[in-house]
Amino acid sequence: MENYSQLELLKARKRVKKVKEFYVHLIVYICVNSFFIIITLINNDGNYWFLLPLIGWGIGLFSHAASTFNFIPFLNKDWENRKIKQYMDEERNAFKNKEQ
Image (cartoon, rainbow, N blue to C red; front, side):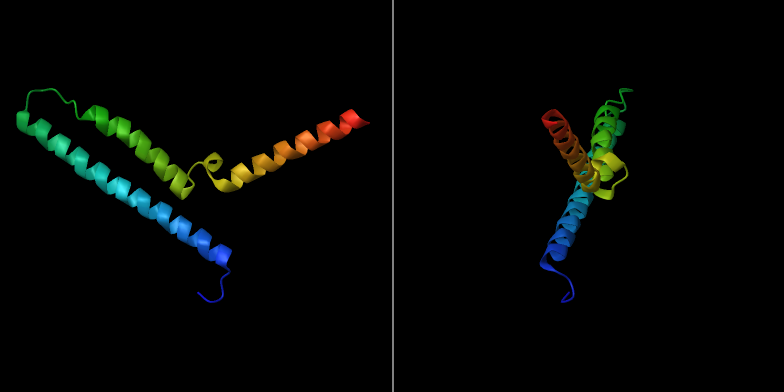
């Protein structure tokens, strides 16, 4: 690790932390929803209520995965930084045009 700057090391640690948090989220999702499914099957009353948290939480889990692994381009930091720069440049150009 001696060839990396402090900034690179900090970014890598932050990324590892995000991936670790996602996997903890995934494990909790699997355990809790498995419990819900087992309870529902044991009761066997024909009411499959476990689908609501399974789907709802699944959407949240998918968005967590998308932001962690950059599935969706507008959720990552590079896109955010490009957009910030674009808006700042637009504001600067608009201000310059008003002065002229």
